[in-house]
Length: 391
Picture (cartoon, rainbow, N blue to C red):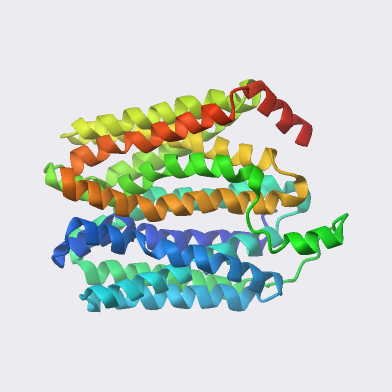
């Protein structure tokens, strides 16, 4: 599994993810420095998810047609161009167009990177390989937001956007070293059914886990977008540590929550995870010292790690084997919706009530997700049986 192509693609994807995670807490600060109101900040921050979602199905078709290298590099080019133009653009409409272009680049690149990496993982180790591949994203999550804040504080927005674009360029360079192959897959049992299903991009059995993930994921998009502004308002420094502590807790919580879900059913991990997310939002409402912010990061990381990974496994286990790709796509579509709506709704709430109340209001969608999950899955043992039968 640890072949040259897989390792290089893993590093390249980590750099790409790091490039836009650097901008997650800093881009709103940049927009505020330009004099934009909170609702405009939220709109410009989250709007790129729209084109990222729209670009993914087209990227998938290009990749399936064998255009691995071209698709990946075109996505990188779009991302790098948008990031490089950010510091020289101050008006609303040009910034909006750049965010939409950035979204196209992110949607294409991340779809291509995951597809290419899967090409070089042995089929019997596919789940393990994808798990390792995602560790690069977690590392970026731990390092990139703090690095972005540091660059912006020490050297300004030009250094920030320059390094972010440099990460994309480095990822593109590593992508050029990968030997792309069109790999054959096992022929489906029902070719006609599969041919018609390729236009069915949504797996219905994964819709409800995806919807719960959307309500749960709104909290992460709100936190990642506004926690730096909120901390500055509270005169709390070194807030970059929040993201590092969150990411470390996320990594540590996933194995334990997965083991708990396997032994006692997914509800045993998802329900406490959602409740922990509620607790972290309440703690952020009261936070006025770095220690409280970091405590909220620990609780939030534990809750989010248990919730999202287990919901992902539920989406896959409830779907037929020949539709697992569509199930994963459907699940991540739910997270994309959360990433796009979170900054917009958070900006509106912050403008109306302030940042403290915004975090308290974020409890509402989490509780909605909890109610939907309990209504959907009142018998965790049945869900566990479905997963073991699927395995």
